[in-house]
Length: 303
Image (cartoon, rainbow, N blue to C red; front, side, top):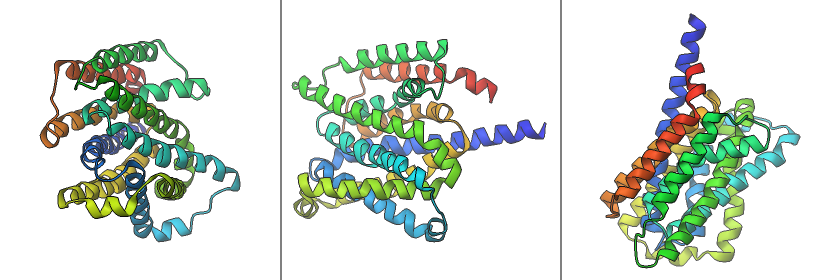
């Protein structure tokens, strides 16, 4: 009985952290869309995650310094940094130059389904009938939603969707392969190391392709506030919560919370960016939410 209560408590706590991270993640699409016209995507990614990593490091110096990583784990963890801190935010920011925050949030919500596919190909998880139907449902829902023309330059919007999807696949790889390192070394040490590696790569990319000084000199107080939102709640708190969730529950159990991501992006996008909440967008959101629940139905019952 006590064991069942402990399992339930762990599941609820992990789900809480995952849901909070997902809601904060949805807000980052809106704030990124708000500032990406003034701060180039490469500089924005470097600033956001560089300062996020610095804050996490300063808040937990003793924890990080006393942690020793196995040499065999360093290279795989570097690839995690490449996937989550370099590829994901850069492609997300590049995509949001062309597509809406709501569409980006909806695409990001397909991450658990991408996670299922990647985990299957790498023999980490088995594909069940539920999961297969969930992937099919999500594909149909997203295709229906993405067919909607949001402006006159529909090809440009689709380009943004494609770039965003590359970022989603990168984040999915992090979700699939990070769990064992988070459990082995703890949330904060792994996240700081991953952010450090990704930030070094972002610095190199921003120096080659970015325009940091001009970008920062031109931003107004509202864009500065949006950048701060990306760094503190959308960076430090979001990364901590997601890492904590993956410590407590499985990637697929955590992924069910990602339905909150497009919901936050759609609502905030409407309020801050004046994006229209359309019928197709609503159908897309419902289909993704149903697909995530369907994919996790069996594991939820077992927990």
